[in-house]
Length: 267
Ligand code: CIR
Image 1 (cartoon, rainbow, N blue to C red):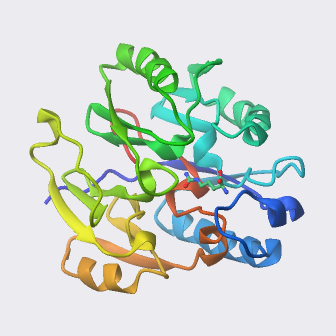
Image 2: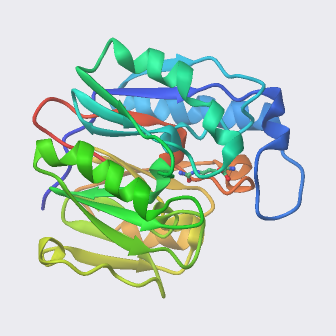
């Protein structure tokens, strides 16, 4: 069975006190202190999977800044695109992210209006980028991404997102040839996806896993998914409590930006 090459580096962003005001679809309070504790454990899991972690300071004007995946799409070890997040309040998040990436990459593109795109809507499967058209990401965003990705031999397939915040709220890759999907979500169709095996989960918190090579992080809120994935014996599963981030509609992938090793790709 195939497994991913582990990413080499990850960027995570500190939780601010203003996280208490982060965007969320359900009412309820958010606890920045608890979120910090959970992010600490998340970072430790990435580090134990072999990634070098860089931590970026938070900005109190950006309550959702810790959901850093939405600010950028890393296309290769040397190339990335700064997105233009769909929520105006999140369009202030990019400058520090850009600063952290500039030294590492040879090309850093930046999306402009009318493009809107959250990184949570981008799911790479080999040379195909699935791009969710959600409440946050539009066709102009998908086109801008396609223009940056084309020189790398990557193409874009847009996928409507009917349920959940982002495409990756309802599907993520466990391994290059295995997709986990929330039951009832439409499966994208493309010849490049014909070799995928699909594993369904009934748990919304279970559909977003983070594959870091052989290690796969699974939300502690997804116990049935955890049990189901025990059958994938070539993977090392790690349970991570991100409940405070779930309360703000976040999941595992959105808490970091990951850089693949040269000539490999990752989620
Ligand atoms: C938002 O609504 O933008 C944040 N509260 C959550 C973003 C989660 N991002 C992600 O799953 N990629």
